[in-house]
Image 1 (cartoon, one colour):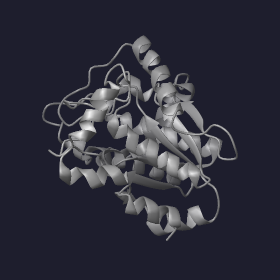
Image 2: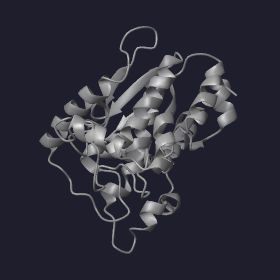
Image 3: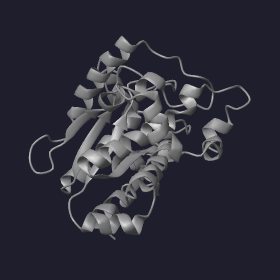
Length: 267
């Protein structure tokens, strides 16, 4: 097994992989380019996102190039929740949040050297994309049957789900395809709650370009009661000092239950 993957596994940073042995060989064969995405559905990233940034730091330290994607277009739609339809934020608000999150994530990676990071915005390749081109070039590779089989979609069939949220998976998959074509990006990382979206991108690249790429998901960072650090969860711990003060952040970890201490320290 690749030494980096062994390290990530020890730290509890691996929940799923499309093919861990193939990924291990891919990492052994030389530096790769990988990406992780952050949607601006709030003015700040949160403690759960920190898992992805720490993973990106580990990968970059091993010589691999990070692409940090801030979702200027996907943030306008929103990944579907199991509970209810998201409230769409105004475009100008989302664009403002894009810049805030871009500045936040940029603090966690190195922009110099052979594995210099880049921050990209998926609004750049979707804003001018026509509906016809999107349906012909992307939509034709997706089976409605498989999309309906996703847990988050099935949970919303009775209460209803908009076509916008139903189609979110196509937009995220398009991101992976675009980065594969432009940067030869061959690994996408994300939280385990994004696994369906991530693997859909892997499949899109296989179908459209006959490409072989990989996916790696981290477990969700949870509080002692089992709830995740999501932007819509109560008690969110933000990484913006104006939303969660440094004192409150310190107190959160100081007051963490004993059973979570080792998990947090390993991460």
